[in-house]
Image 1 (tube, rainbow, N blue to C red):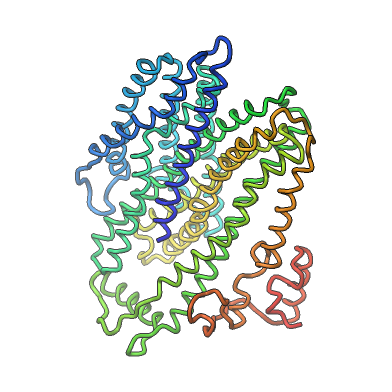
Image 2: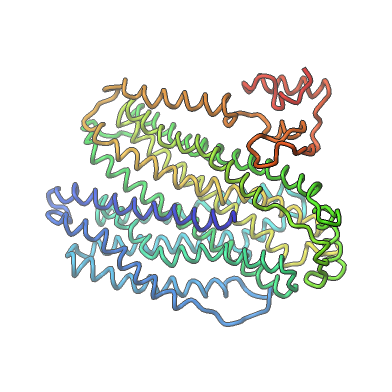
Length: 592
């Protein structure tokens, strides 16, 4: 369920927003740029606007035809296959779609719209930049290459070095995409101005149909592996699905890199459109303290956004863990066998006889309540996303009205720059951690008789656990942040037109008041923006009231944390006061 939501629905919404945003930015910039003397688009605003809609139409046709080129011949068996071989099966379709789009784009740009080869070059640069970012991402996240292998090797010395190496790989992976984006922005700006950058974003997203399909391939392969495991199929089937799942991790990471690149180009295009709308005669000097303050504030926002989403994942995971532990102990079948006992017996028998050989009798099986886990995660995700979503909308409103357009320009520039780097790092580090675990499975470390190799595999599993919120939550969420802030700014641009600093600052008190009230409601009242342990009341024996039907009578097992003692009481009180949490992190567990 989670993979379908994140890598299909979530990624689809993200890229759709980028697609629409790039079209809006291109159409908006076409109008203003066509009015400039001597510009490539002078007097051709209608054709420039039409091109922003023609290119996606050509891309749809090209992507549809490209699907027919996706095929592969059977090479290797199970894990004995090179990921590059499988990746080529998908890339053939993308390359064919890109070639067809290039031909169609030339006809649209030069023949139909008459905008010249400069604009056509901008479209192709955007398309090539997207494909280049995809290949770079593949290098850093596929276990065929050095970065992922290095993470696996660090597992020999424990989980800490796996996490450290993964962070290093993620940080280094920022270099190539940044250079690609920088070259694309500079070259398209030189060829077509701000409109050239915007239309290059449209070109990058033109073959979105097949690109998004390859990204959705990941959850399909992952779910196939899950079904094979639930059906107790043999090891050879699991080996095949695991190799396809490893490829799915790479395509998902590639799709995320593509999404980040397109989000940056889209946000920059929207930023240019905002600049043209507000028409500030004073300009935007980087050395201006107002602009620089905006840049610093904007650079901080992606870290706040990532922190809120990361902490939210931890809270939701803790609640699900507690629910699963309760089910292990209390869900029983007609013979009185608990779910935990059933799983333990099956695991022991599977290790003894092999996967797919042993299967429990129907009367000995126990069905878990998976729906409740889905309900918990859904409820938590909706509640926890209130704050990040509201802050993303309120931040540009507060900056634009309280200070002025120059501060808001700096805010957007800082958020785009910082958000791009953080998103690339998180997405690629998470993908590399994930495939390091897959590489351990391919090498058979989990079932090795060597204790050191088993510990190496466990260390990589820890890295994968850290990487999941990196690549599936915080990283993709930053794309939404920078685009949403840019879109909100463009929407309110007419209200800020010709304004100087601190003009009508009183209007900025409205979003500021909303920000303060919302923070107070989500903090002390709803217990969302707090440092409190989400399992505090469950550890003490009572399930939360909103856990679902029949949950109020449940008794939750402690998670191994000490809940009494004067030493812990004192430490929690000190930490709680330092962090502004009152009585302590687990204040309702501590003896008064």
